[in-house]
Image (cartoon, rainbow, N blue to C red; front, side, top):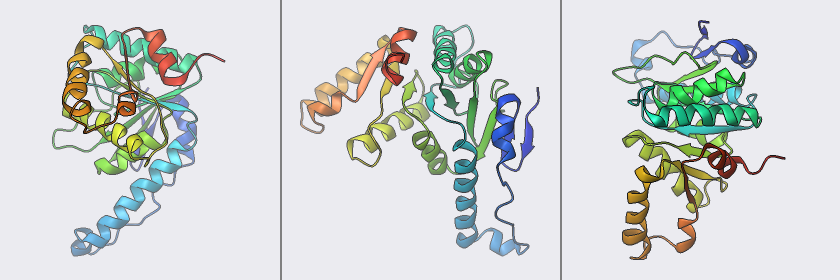
Length: 240
């Protein structure tokens, strides 16, 4: 099923209801080419991204943001784990929000979609742009990383983080910083893949905690597991 496009929003299946409420033409574009490259225009464009993102995601309901590498193939064990986690989150009544690309993002969206739930992709425009994966049923395109990051935090009850590169690490430490400084409500941050993350956690303890750069309570912000049941339980609590 192809995505129905409306401005920077796209939807298929369950996502079409959210798309129907979005006003993608909220900010009209001026005709002056100089204005289109000016800072005032950029401010309006940023505002438009916030408005469209808020309008679409406010109707999604409880959700969990899942992060991880775009370079992981379907044969990788972490892909299947992310797919399982996506399915279990939907079964617990949560939508799944990812960056909408391949790899771990596709796997989590796939699990959510196959379980009949809301599968959201917040994509980013890059020089080598990746297509929205086939399992997203509500896609929102962003030009600005900081707007996109706001959506991941604002509409997520938890972060689930699989192995990944610089982008994954950026999202992880952004979340920890916001929680530590009180700029965001405290929410669970779960690292999936103990053998992958254990070295980083040991380094944080040895170089940040022991040297006094973070507090002992800051270490409690990080949880790790390889078990899909435990991952979901750490993220959203025990089933009611």
